[in-house]
Image 1 (cartoon, rainbow, N blue to C red):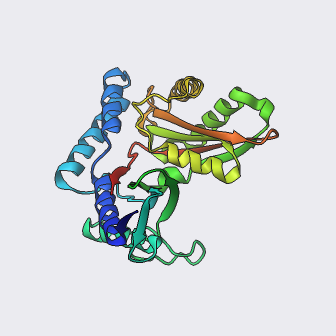
Image 2: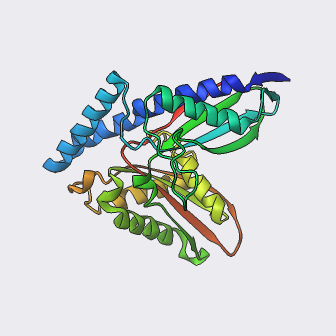
Image 3: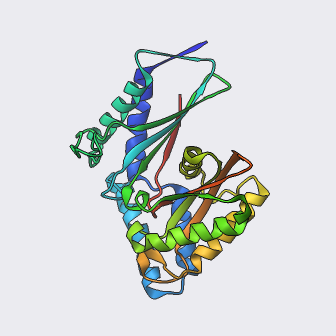
Length: 280
């Protein structure tokens, strides 16, 4: 049994919080550059160029890609041969987020009560999802989720008879309703199956997958392509300026579900799709 101290977890999460906020993922930079080469719309090309410039400055100067540094979502795979020592895991996660946002001079955007709206001034508590996996390592993904796009996310319980067409129509309608307010070009995280809550979890988790990596499920890969084409045909474009780059990517995760249900969740994400990964 391998022992891992909570202090090591806090230290890693602190570094990942800063990294995710100042360095745009390589797959996102690649997708924006590719879109810039293909885009014909003048306004869209200008917007995409500015996004790349912004990402470069953020990385060089170690400042946030976006002023909305998000509510931190942490995904953690804990090897079943690991023993965590040194205190409660959730406290260690929140300590790491607190330190990262303080040391990185990142905006604190979390209110403790959704009703009272008082800022915690530490960007905590974070959202923590854990899974027990084989092995003796802890794998950690940190995703700062901005709420310009999060606020435009949606979930529905389709009828099984709605099928693939119903899924595509729901996603396209969600993007239409989001419009330029969610800061396109988008990355769409889609969860299909499970229960009401699990579909939303799948949608969020799917955003961790690089958008330049094909879905290993052939049917889901084909559906991703159909959705991406349908969304880009909306002509919303970068920042709502028109063009064929409304979305840069579509990621789908699915799970078994009940014979009577077809849960579908769409987690909207803006051009600043941020996450960072580390292993202990």
